[in-house]
Picture 1 (cartoon, rainbow, N blue to C red):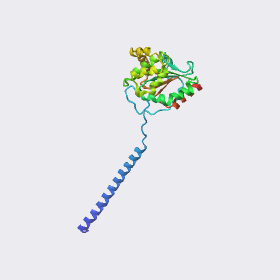
Picture 2: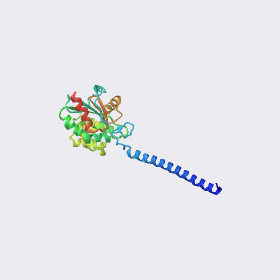
Picture 3: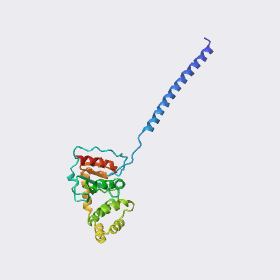
Picture 4: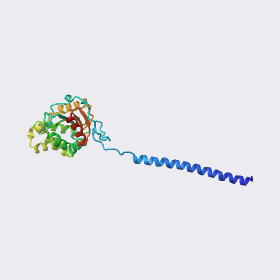
Length: 248
């Protein structure tokens, strides 16, 4: 074969092989990129957190539908104290709530869920709710608010004061607590002295220690007849557990 012809044929063959290689590589890269795009598009979006943790991380914990256990997961007697409660003292269902007045997720529970619980279960005598303080260190008004609420409790106005705090979380302060006490018709001299003297500081600390002993690490945390529920879960979660307990 002529040398020039041979060289031309060789160049053509080489070009064809190189083209095929580039095509195959390009096709492979395109497939991989396509697969990556699909994976990204199908990835689940993060869900907003439902509780404040003791570390200050609000997290991206998705609400989960709990399965009612066959037996209590914690001894409820260990959680009961002389704390304020609302509902029938002999109600078949007891909910112990560990909460922080400054916690936004506790505020969400108050706004979205508590009213429904009160209407369907508390006011009908089926559920008793016990409130216990669990003020987190990174919320500067949590402990003062907890102590102020206990001072209101001394005059029989705990739940009214509780509601006022959650309805006014953006204006929490010592001056606000004293004003709200006056608005509720409390003996302001007694209330102010109670707040200023830190009368209930030890009680708030005791609640916090009890929560830690029960495994509470963030707010809000609930124990429903022994079953632990963490976060500002929707009403349906509480309803599922309560109905299962009532059916037993």
